[in-house]
Image (cartoon, rainbow, N blue to C red; front, top):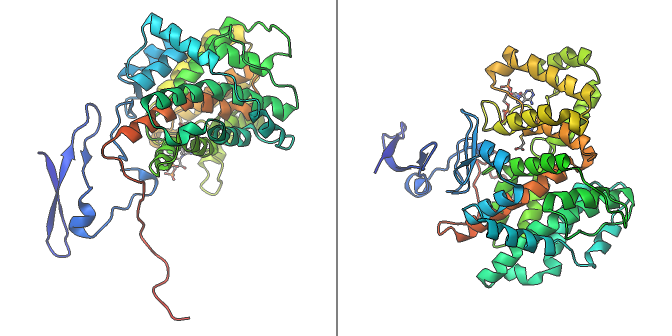
Length: 422
Ligand code: CMC
């Protein structure tokens, strides 16, 4: 077995640790025996050098700007497969056959209705409540309505839970939006596909047979696919940490939604548009680039940089291409697009960004497309939630099936006062 040896230069003692090999990507040092052997912990704030699990779901090569779900390149999936096919792939490991897809689609359509009692939860929120607050509460509340999933006893329970969650999240998201406006809820329409149904529940009037243009469905479906999973990011790590306590998936995913809300993570898409609007004109871009580089200014360019990608985020490339292809059909806000393109051009030729390997990430362009779909910016992170729910589910399931699973319980380097007397 390959191994590394660590020498403690205080006393010359040597400790050997095995090296585990992945199917692709970086080797990992198996430090599980480290504390027992050395009496020391590792120190790694932000987990920049830590692999927290083994996973078969998603692969990222941040240096090359590569993303794969179950081995398939994100570019191929986004171009050739629907979001539902991608969901099936993430949850089952293989793409569905034609018949499997039809059955899966029908079942999700049927499960997209929520318990009537759940509507009361939305009425309890004050006007102008952020949809993310409603969303995390509503997902947690699902456990009260489907309480058999608190202790899933059988494979059948597990299958029902994952379909239920996936199917109901868009309905809850549309309800959250409509509650924030004080307008009546629209129930799912069984005749419509997953993505079309969401746009319909967002935008229709009661009784209106609203036609959703195919181009809009395609754009949003691609956005869902691009958000579907992203290995051990902050919200997925949260889902796994909550799962590690034995909590049910509704609790774990509700916590994941909260972790996603921050602007360093999923909240960035809302912040990007707010920032583009704030910059306001192409002429002011240089001023804001200068602010980004000023060490005394906390201003950061939203939608730029990534912990893992030190090259173009492949999802941003796909979205930029989609934007170029569909901008006339979708009616993209050209002024904001021009500001975004100028920021990208300036940043990509500026040494500050080049030396730190800061490239546009998925959130940089998604907001422009979502705005054209008449989705307000307060809903952008909710769109991320809808897309990512399948990834969180797949990770929750994988965690629970992992024979090496353990409760998440990191240690610390204590730097507080030494013992003292009162
Ligand atoms: N604008 C300006 N400077 C930046 C930016 C940015 N967006 N991002 C990183 N930097 C600088 C940072 O100041 C630091 O510079 P220095 O070395 O001089 O101190 C250097 O780059 C490294 O930054 P970091 O914060 O240590 O990097 P990180 O890997 O811990 O953070 C990040 C990654 C995504 C939190 C960060 O790049 C960021 O805050 N970006 C803006 C928010 C954003 O777009 N988030 C969405 C991420 S993609 C969607 C998702 O998957 O959640």
